[in-house]
Image 1 (cartoon, rainbow, N blue to C red):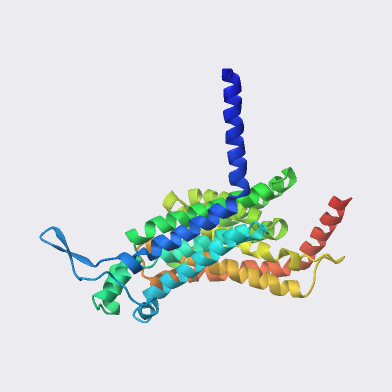
Image 2: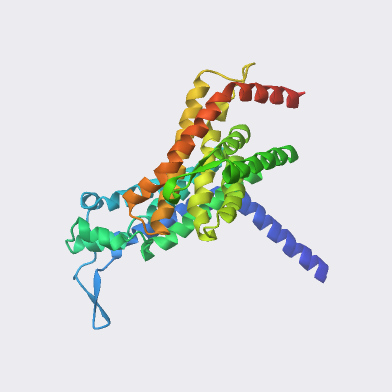
Length: 359
């Protein structure tokens, strides 16, 4: 066999392998979620409490940590964040397996993985919780262990969650690629969002963010083109541009920007009920779906920014929530109100565009 034939054979094998991975990416996404859950829960079954004495690690108890997880939930409010993180990751894993049936499951899985990762890094690692319970620590002692830092017990699961989230984004856009017209429209709307963020904003006192209309153009993208493209436009493109212009550092990108503005895609999940197949293209129930989508998007952005305040800036949970609610809540409310005001003309434009493309 000649060298050229051998190279072609290797290329064909690589191409077949890549095609196999693409067609079965739902298995990879779901498996990553399962691994993340197992790694997070390992201390439930295997952690041995240890301490330091004269520079040497010594066991503090004879037995491995083993107890009912529900008992732990009654001991400290911090464990509730951990509990909900597990629920979100579990839901993301289920959606990861289900997205072979519908594209929207990939986007839902992406958001759920990001929310779960944010909650996970805002709680002490499971080992810390288990150790505190084993040693009979009270709520104050457990709180002192968290310090809003990602413990070693959650670093790997958080990384896996972000990997699974990015796989969901990539797969959703492979199945529904961007057209030239969509890219042009999104580019105009993203540019408008950047202008709103830079020049049409109202700064809150004490530097607590700003209120602006940047969410409105991003909402338009999600509503017209669906959640997958809305996430790419809002979380990746606009989020990265805004992260650079804000100047807080690239390490703020995952929570404040990728998740914060990627949350705009939530409105896209309701597009088929908002833009109806009827002649006018709208229905009274559409106002309710816009309200629900706006609330969910604002809530997810709030979770991401709160996690950022706790992990990066060392805030405790209540001050972090107070800080971010000052600008995220009014910004989300104003953007949702504007979208509801624009609903009827937008529906007519969308209906006209659909008929024009059909011809």
